[in-house]
Image (tube, rainbow, N blue to C red; front, top):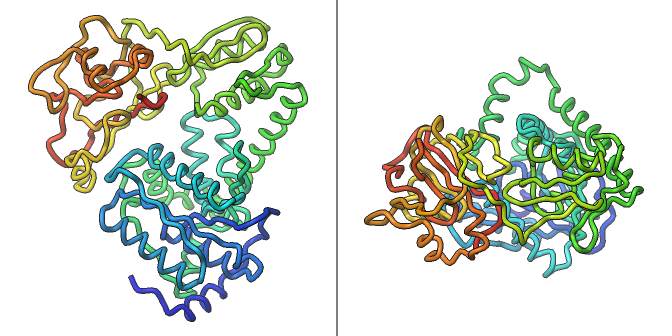
Length: 463
């Protein structure tokens, strides 16, 4: 894809509407640019502000998901930045091929963190817009998220490491349709990611559903209404967080949260503190069942223990703690594994997906490690899970015969304390997968497949 001449591109960018002023921040301002329409519009609109222009630094992360197309994205972003005279840092994922959204987000955030430390970046701009707010609300509502999850993505968000993320397209009330019209009118090109149109990811399916009839069903301007509601939810969450801080209910240096002052307080405040504590420890979107005993113990001043996303959380003596040294004892009882939503106790997520040719090629090359994610053929109605049992054995993919599960985990150099905390996924009673080792050979894919099963481990990293 050819860019206009530098002079023509700069003239085009100057014609874009001005964005709201950036929040006060020292030093350079980072802009995450993928090469897609959203981030290209964001960069050009920020560049159009002469006061902002010399502070801009672009960050581009090559996820290596789409082969040569991903490499071309990086070249396009580098050329765009060169034409605008904006410094650009390019990062590359170590692996390649398709991976879960969560895995790719972690890899991208790690690159952003490296750049923040190297350059002293305090403010990072991302290209979220009003349509992203709508998609997020629908997705999080379906998963039973708390207030913080429903309020995201916010126009301005502060992180524990001191950096902030600014989303000026949300602050300006810009929709996808509006930014596309702006780019076309100005004659500014962008890169298209064909995977965004594929109904593999849940967010893509929501996007397609809204495109087909969102305005007919909800009325013109529904995105603005969603954004207002998300803002109200965010204000309520901030008020509860401030109340908790006044009571002294904040996570201390040891990672504990004092909860004694919450006895008898409104349940909404207790839930906010619980979710904030879990978020602090990297545990997101907990389910209601796993939080219920903890919330009841906090409200009554009692004690309780619960497994949340494969991590043991305890309320005792007026303090909320994470027991990393005590892995959950799952036991031999089988539990059903739900489809489409995380299972808190096991830390597993099972989803029905379509395997296209691109994803199949990545799987065939072994680009996706079975430590956290596998794709298999198995009926979703027969899925269950349990703890490890003595004598567990099965034939993993790539093995000539069956082997003891304990030996497989040892060979993969998974520490003993982690081996005891791993769930065993079953299909019709037979072992299908255990995080850290390959899935069962009997469930292997033979090519592009509709209605395959993706299993993701959401628990702590192995090894």
